[in-house]
Image 1 (spheres, helix red, strand yellow):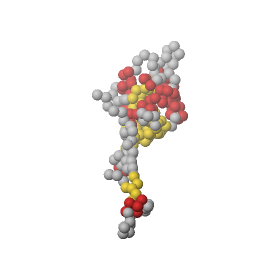
Image 2 (cartoon, one colour):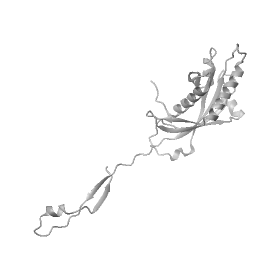
Image 3 (cartoon, one colour):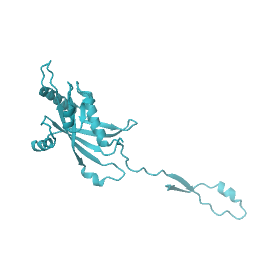
Length: 213
């Protein structure tokens, strides 16, 4: 059974679409979301590939203050890794193609510092910042050492912030609609006067705002 999409999955898919649309020679189908090992195992033929590996989801510090009807946000930490294939006819090695891919990734993310998430009706409900990040050598080694049977490859760190957990935040509860009730105070009619005539001549002198249950 298919799982429902989340704000996290939609944010990473938006990043994949961005890279696929702006890098020549690679499309979305050749950009894998998952561990580098998966991309390495699927590397066949002459198609260059990219891997987007989300290795950490950092809860925003203000999450404890978020109303239960609002959505919390997270920072996604990713590793983007090019998987190049040699082009013998052009005398281009796999390593050179990986450098070309990495250069394109850096260019696209520099030119596009954010992506938007939209509801089904087309309205924007979140703008996600894309930030290139330096991953220190020790941290990078730990990430790659956790990948079984995968050689260390050139990679760049990326942070997506702030990503809503839900795909369409509920927002704060709407204030109930109000209705205006006009309250009339009628004096006691003089003796011998038709009460209906007194009522017809009166105007409201009290206005009350009532919120329905």
